[in-house]
Image (cartoon, rainbow, N blue to C red; front, side):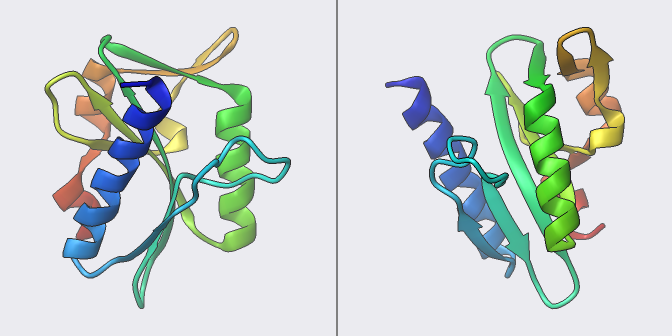
Length: 129
């Protein structure tokens, strides 16, 4: 299975999870490959809007480019949505991390499994946040 299809499957999994909890959700196929900023998922209900970028890894650390973070921040500001990075590490559940909780690195940003578990929200925490 290609990296692209694994990412798309992960995004679809989250889409179904949000819909099952009555959050309208759309997936933006090809996000990151157009000239305009756009998250992987737009999620919302009557009281909340979230823009979500999805990342997964077999390693214990996920690296994000400055562009990943800046595009999510920019889109979220224009759309008036709360930005989140949905991260999943091997054999772990999804965790939702805010931009403020990312670690700045010389080349961009990162989030470790340990920090995601300490600072991130579970799916259930996110939807009741």
